[in-house]
Image 1 (spheres, rainbow, N blue to C red):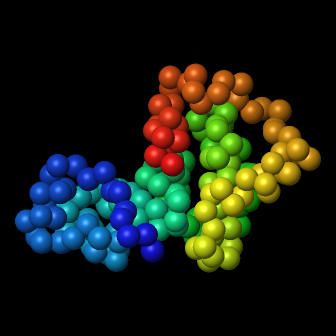
Image 2: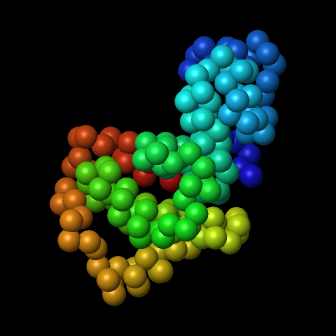
Length: 165
């Protein structure tokens, strides 16, 4: 498991943790109902915090990637089991309304590899050759968004995602 999970706590959440003398690092061991009770948070917020920890437990996948998965309605790795990296990446681009930097597809390939194999020795860049070979053979879907992420004013998280890598 990663040493540090970024939760993007609110000021109030940080204060509750401080008052209760609970380390952020320990929060990854709590179930959503325990998080909700501990932080006086809604069940939805607790579910999101739990998901942030679960997704970021995969090395080289950060907070922005985790938040994007949550924005698409995913809260656990189990929900993603059986999905292909290509399927998830293509859905991500549709969701964001812009085509993404290739390293994002590599991150989806890492995610699926981890889910299928439990192998935490790989990083997103280990999947670059696989992605290139796949796209060379199959290309992209016809309905792929035409606008690149760096021109998309509607999706600013993509730029911060790439800057955090």
